Length: 99
Image (cartoon, rainbow, N blue to C red; front, side, top):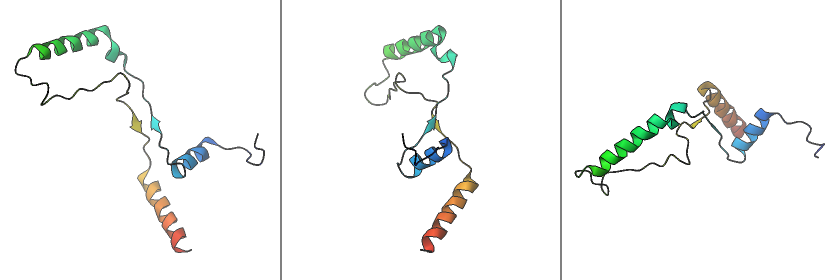
């Protein structure tokens, strides 16, 4: 399709997207099976019913509701070697100063 480009490896594509397109990538982790087990769901329901029947709980003042349906709480960014980041920043600064 684009013969003048040749082949592009994954690391070069990733670097281009991060540096020039301002895209960040996150590593997804598998959801633990116990999280969706029937016993876990039942205990969550029991706890919610206990809180609902608690007259001392003020739902409008001190409660935060988190919907896990559309999110994965185990998403984390790729970790980089801090020595490499510092070195690349220094190299970038040196090339900018030499211009």
